[in-house]
Every structure is written in structure tokens, then in C-alpha cells.
Length: 199
Picture 1 (cartoon, one colour):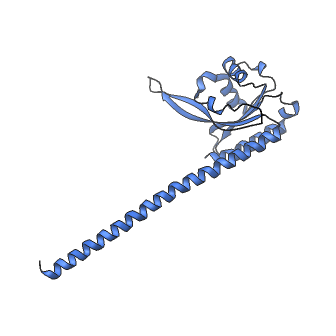
Picture 2 (cartoon, rainbow, N blue to C red):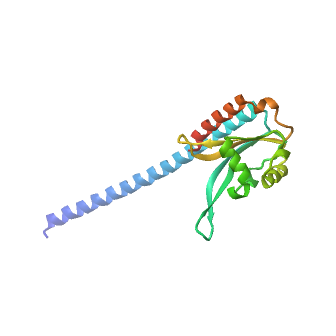
Picture 3 (spheres, one colour):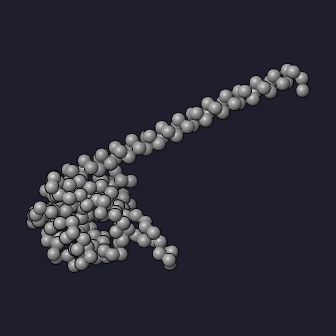
């Protein structure tokens, strides 16, 4: 290899090194930007969800509005997955306890009547929780101070249930007017809107 070939090889190596450094820096910066963009997008979506919950709570004169999302839990020895739901968003009126942190990893199997009613009737609404047949769910609501409840499923566009939009009445009971067909239509519209933020 003559001196000219050595200079060319050294130049090519130097250029390749410089390009590699710049490409590495470019991809690192892009990765940071994507990560930041995801965080910004997630924050904006959460802000929209909380705004929607505040609006719904005000329109329905409720004391607590929340979203429960379904998720996979652990697995049983049989290999079958545990289906669970957890509170992911919550707003409360002044003087009403926040229950979000205490509403995590509920097993669907423990609240069979509640979930079945929600799926079959597309709502779970009781003016007085003393009428609720599901004793486990009834006791959980009592611990939260709930007097009345109104829940509807949150669904994707293809009809898959991914969560629950819920309202709790703690300071008093839900009115008869709030159990009307118009209210049901309103709650379904709000659940569709929220589904767009969650997906």
C-alpha cells in the first residue's frame, strides 16, 4: 500500500467516524424528542380527560367522577389471566374524599353482578345503593360513602369495552330526572368522547 492509498484510507476512516458520531447524535436527539413528545401528548390527553370529568360531574350534579380502565393482572396457576380494573382518573367536589388510590386492581370476578349488569344493560345506575344485589360491590361503595351511583361502559369504535365512566353521589342521592333516557344518552356520548382520549 503506497502513501496515497494510506492517506485515502485514513480520510475515509475519519469521514466514517465523523458521520457515525453525527448520526449517533441525531438518533439520540430524535429519541429524546419522541420521548418528550409522548410525555407532552400524554399530559395533554390527561388534561382533556380531567376537563371532561369536571364537565360531566357539573352537568350531573355529582360529587365524584372517575374512569376505571380494564387491564390484565397476574396469572392463575392454570395460566388463565386475572381480569382487573383500576381507577386511572378522578375528580371530586370539595369536601369529598378521593378514592382513586384505593380503587386499584379490582378483580372482575369479585364483582360479577356489577360487571354483568354494566355489560348487559350498558349502564349501572342506582338511586339508593341499598338496592344493589352484589354484596361485595355494595360494601365497597358504602366504604366510599356513596349514596347513589351512575356508571356506563367506555367502548372503542368497534364496541370493545375498555373501561367505565362513573359518577358517585356522596352528599345526597341522584335525582329521578338524572335516571332518564336523556341522561343515559348524555352519559353514552361522554363515554365515547373519553374513549377517544384513552386510546
